[in-house]
Length: 313
Image (tube, rainbow, N blue to C red; front, side, top):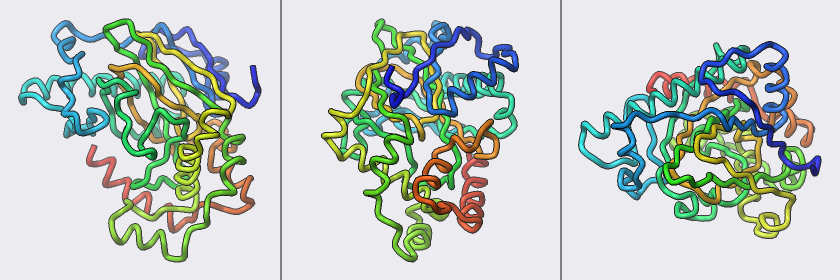
């Protein structure tokens, strides 16, 4: 195995609320926080008989990439009110199971997990291509253009619920540090007053830090570089139906290239809640650049914005 490639580690966990001994927790956390993908091929999310009707693309309104649920409103879906309420309950049940599983596997995370949007993705990944920035079939790390996070982690749980025995197909690429050292020199510095202006115009919720700016730059430069997309070290990973997988998507260079009918939960994790914060993208980028990339002022604006965001969901 190429040491510069993202690690993919298979675990035997088969329950949404597992009992994990401390030694296993330490091992799982190390793999996850070093930028690995944890694959749980025995952890399926079961749908009730009356929920299986949702395994059809017609529930998508065709305008949004995904059907999303923020705890109160369902977006990107179409159907009558009773059906949409049932679909929201399905997604909410997955969100609760995914959050409980993360807390059981990583007890240090449990009191700090902030549940963000949940999504149901009935459409095939290859059919959702828009602009190159939104083309998730290209290798990238996740970054939020409108929600600066000041270094907070993006922790995601995925589950393939495809009824047609079709795999969800990813490509995973280089480790975060290898990718960051390649593209960080291409990312311009922020202009004076840029963060303030974006916040004042409500382009962002709170002030964008240099870290957020760099993460967006890494995302964009990786996607825009077609030579990199085709020639960088990478491997294909297939997730069979009934498989769940976990990763920090702000750290794993990934691309979704095929497959439909996926459930996904995004969870935000404060940096101090990590078992080893020095493994975070923020720490890596600060080592590469030799300067601090967040500020107390920026964190204040971020926390203020996120209080409202998390209350809303």
